[in-house]
Length: 141
Image (cartoon, rainbow, N blue to C red; front, side, top):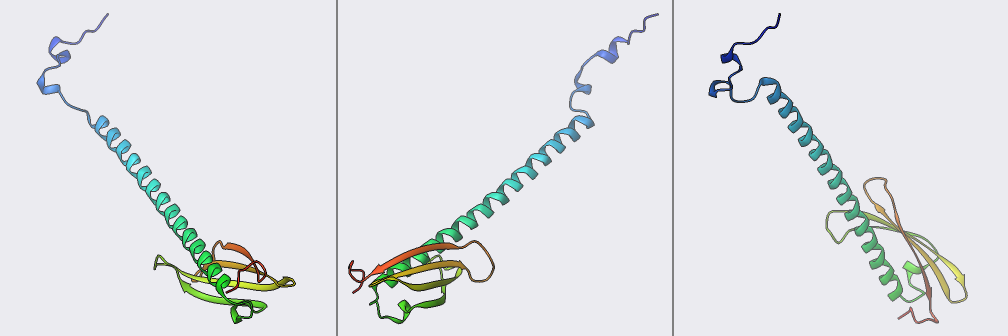
């Protein structure tokens, strides 16, 4: 025997229009998942931006120090053989950096300077620059 629903139960009139509770809950869960994913993506982008800004600040500080060292006479104290260190505020005004440089003789009239910049407050990746200063090549004043 076949059972058929009464005609009024199958009618899709205005009183049956709308969404069921299950549909609303699925849509809310999906929206929540998308918002959480977007927040995670934004946090990752912010970390990458901060890391890139720090790398840029370290590079700028190294280049500024290299230009300063190139402008000094070879007998200057900052170009004396050995290790040197200084803490500076980066040009962006947000990062304190520790600059280390070592000077060694690389031949007659030639000095090798290895500069390194790191964040001053915490351990982190360093930016390194190697500079050769020669009095004969005109890098002195």
